[in-house]
Length: 111
Length: 110
Figure (tube, rainbow over the protein chains, first blue to last red):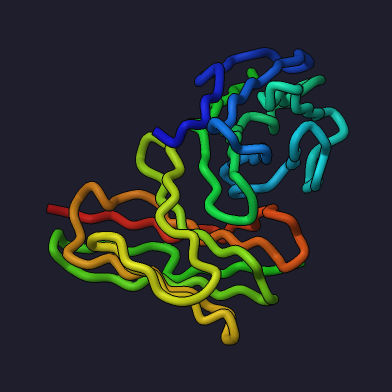
């Protein structure tokens, strides 16, 4: 168990819908990251938050947004979903520029 | 941006065999990690190793930062070692944003 908790584990939704993925980082970790793993793109960095502030952005679509709350949990919002958004979405946390710990992922299927 | 190349892409071993996985990266990094993704999809951190050598049981890793490569050694492989091994780097000055290689898919047969 990495200590990073993601909910839900599985999500099936229709095209055009909006979903929210939730992440609780390891106790004490201020940095939270979101990654997307798809068959064609591999593991890609989406966005990083540090203590509530956006720190770095990757190839995150405009339809996607994220935030980190005062209690350090984070949410990734995906809207106007398309079939191609089907993927495994990981949240990760770290105490700094050291080891990164990944949650079990949320498997999103858009039908 | 920084490129991360892993080799070989696929590897099939008999239980008990040893193997070496390689990761080449194209620019200086301040963070390099190895991960194992098991058949259930879970990403497990094996090593944080921006330079030097570390060992953890049957696994060891070496990073030569000046030559921009890292090696992961698996000795006496077991069927539970099957899965995909990823190398990930964070470019210098890039906070801790990890760039992943495409992975090495390992299958260990009994």
